[in-house]
Amino acid sequence: MKVLFVLTSHDKLGDTGKKTGFWVEEFAGPYYILIDKGVNITLATPKGGKAPIDPTSDTEDAATESTKRFHKDEDAQKMINNTHKLADMKAADYDAVFYPGGHGPLWDLSQDKTSIELIETFNEQKKPIAFVCHAPAALKDVKDRNGEPLVKGRRVTGFTNTEEEGVELTDVVPFLVEDMLKKNGGFYSKGADWSEFVLVDGNLITGQNPASSKLVAERLFDALK
Image (cartoon, rainbow, N blue to C red; front, side, top):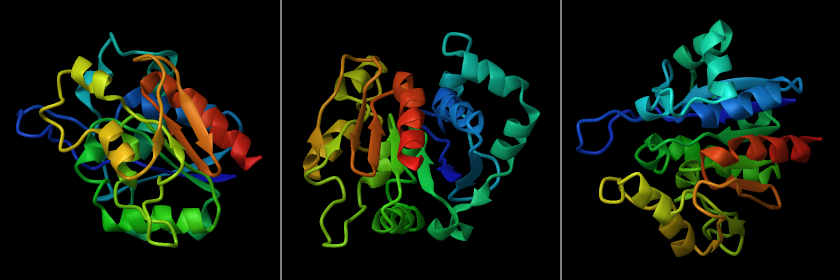
């Protein structure tokens, strides 16, 4: 089984002067769930090369068993430092696609035409498409074959407005994931803030926050079996 992981290339947190990128746990948790089950993983970003890590996710406070394993894993770090360019990736070569979150995707993957077309192709091929936390931002302009928003009429979740308030970035981000999913006609629901919550609707798998990342990967693997 082959799964394409698509990470952000964006590292600037709005006009704050701070850095962002992808959230380590949201990559590492699913990465190890899947490779431990024998899945072959390829990493890609819009720009290729090094995928930026959100420094907030790389602290002792945010550490998990998966992030600790990642920091000892030279092969995984080499992959993060040398991602493929998204434009070179073809949906036909993979069985599924997974988007880890972090705030970065709000800026680049939400409007990246290559990413949009790739998700649309995976969807048309009826392959699993999975997103966690802020990564559903990548669905913002994705359409189904009828030209409607892909999430319209589908059960979805993602980082909540109250979780964004909790990290005090409501006025920094270009849009709120919860609001966007609702605006696009998604049947949005959520668990308690920071709790594990994942929804599966057909081939679409979404997780609410970092705590949901491993379960998203489990559901993705179930869909591949």
